[in-house]
Length: 144
Image 1: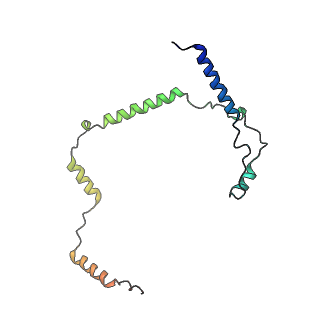
Image 2: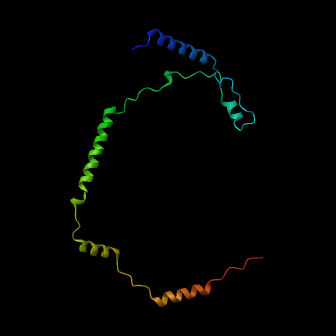
Image 3: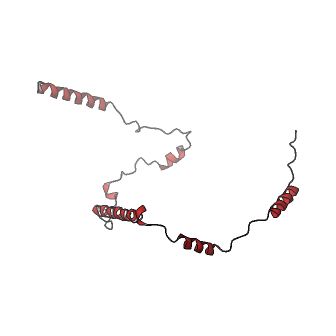
């Protein structure tokens, strides 16, 4: 390497100093933030904000649960689900089953459905349509 080691270190130190000085100029923008009194939540903010409230500590975190299975056990359960899925796919593949004895199945389905209904009489349909036309009243004409 042809670079001088002192020059790279000096550039790094100068960069860190510039960043440090720039960081010292930054202030917390929310430290003195005010709530607009015309805001619909101004009363709610004033009622709920407590500047002297204590900060939470790690003591407030709940203990690690003891009745939870280990992480590795989740992987075993997931692998078992994948194996079960593969078994279902293999058991229901196209080559594993065929249709047979369909006539007996169709006869049983017809027997379960009950007696076959006769088709409606065209005269009954025409009479119903005529009756509905007689009962229908057109809407009144629009007012002008």
